[in-house]
Image (cartoon, rainbow, N blue to C red):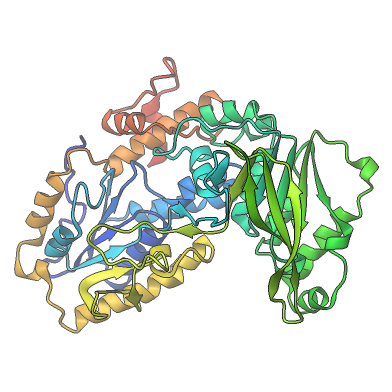
Length: 485
């Protein structure tokens, strides 16, 4: 769909390495940046399955967190550098095979992230009304592969988890839609949230208050929502030996416990909001109940020993809810043609080198980010991960690992491969999408309105000076495109 653009690195030395990166999210972009820092003449092609770059930053950060979304600006500056080309809407295993990349490039770096929910693994988990948090995040972030509709029909729901994703899901469920009007939220999501009948949200946390994985800032943000009360049982956040030891040693945990105790001390008479978040500590899900859809969740109370290890007590608590969202971790999807450890949910590797069935590194194949080490850490932590992988990559190049591009004509081989991708979205195509979203945003007096429909994204990418179909009279999109540069 997008004609092959001139090679932005056409002036590079012919002996400079040609490197393919699969995944244009933070992990892939950080790897590209580090590669160019090591060798400014390197030629890099990033292949991304989605029609737009930025991965988790675009499709995994809640709309009401513009500060984190600003990471896109830093990623943008990397991707517009000479020596880097972006090929979006290209799926490995469908449009290209890994072996084809390894045949043309001196190295292939896999940075595909983690896109699936971990399984809950309790009776009733398969009932309608039992949802994965990753699926919900994809929906409200306008992921082009997410279903356009989400069943927001329950007055009482449960969220299971003790990390920032759990807080994101809870916050998006309980926030009144009009207070998201300044964000880049897609129109169909804003409309659906405006009809959400939710009144009570129960957040179930297996551990105690000193052992949660929330950040203090994210937790406090939950208490700033308009017309929302946060309810904490004073008995669940009171002093005990383990909690006091943790808050004495770790500032972050102390801040979290202090916030929870402040909420627990609020007079019930002062809780008058139309929506309520109930924080339940020391409860782990045991069973989802319902004849044909979720109507309740049974949780088992847990207790910590002196070392902070939690185990079930056998005591069951029931929460009458019409939906349950699990946010207990992500899983990576296998990359066709690449070894995958299904038990660990990631690629087998050593120092960033992908390992074959015999345990030996596969020549010229590397991994970085969550597909390599599992879904742990914040977005910025992928920088150090990429540094280790890139160090291994260059160590192999310098040690004389056979280089395909040194044996053939690397530019022509790459151009032949790319020319097959007639539905790809290149960098100029992304700038057109960006301009169209900013134009839609200007109508609503916001920075952008995200386009979620894949066909519309591709149409905008292929249309010079794109005009979103739903907006017949808009400011000059050519000017928006110039600003996007």
